[in-house]
Image (cartoon, rainbow, N blue to C red; front, side, top):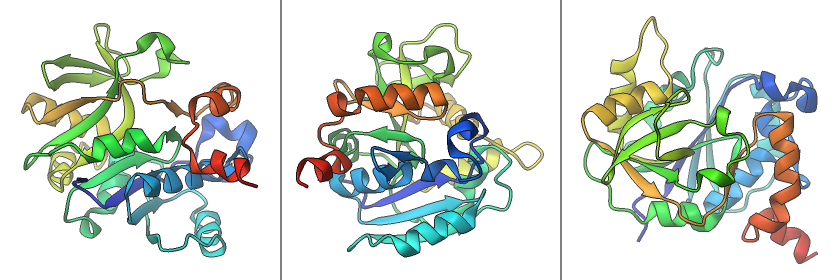
Length: 253
């Protein structure tokens, strides 16, 4: 039984590293297999059991609002929150949605695609008060851009260190988090000069032994934040994302 029916998607950044593909459009609207990345995220989450979405926008918020208004999503509920400080780190975007999320929720990035079964398995994990559970991938050899990936050190069921520059690590951060509202308190406490990243908040949780690790095992995911990563994702999409609602749309046409 899923612990959460709500999902927070961070879609505020300007995506400078993928600008050669997006032009002036926001990164969440870059099309992959005929659908914007944001649609991949929403539909895969919905297939995993999510019913309500809170999407934080910033750069070209008008374009994302327009797409949401024009794209019928059936019974999916979507609330949009605008982060005027989108040029800051992603923890600030998460904090912008604080008042709308009072129960456990799935936290996702707008540029990480995944299989619904992976999100479904994460949602099925019991989460303790004040805890966050991060989906981690121990299959390090299959990662496309290891240098750019966020690494984690795991001891037992807990993550004890997280960051892109870790020298010693056991697994990789998939960008999929099962959270309680206490996450926002940790992000607030991690703020310096009005800025903080998600990893800053996660480091606070790791120090308290409140950052759990969930092994995604054979579940596939991909961070699509550079032209090279996008091209790689196009190549492997039909092989690795068979459960994707986007791919199934083409199969049934």
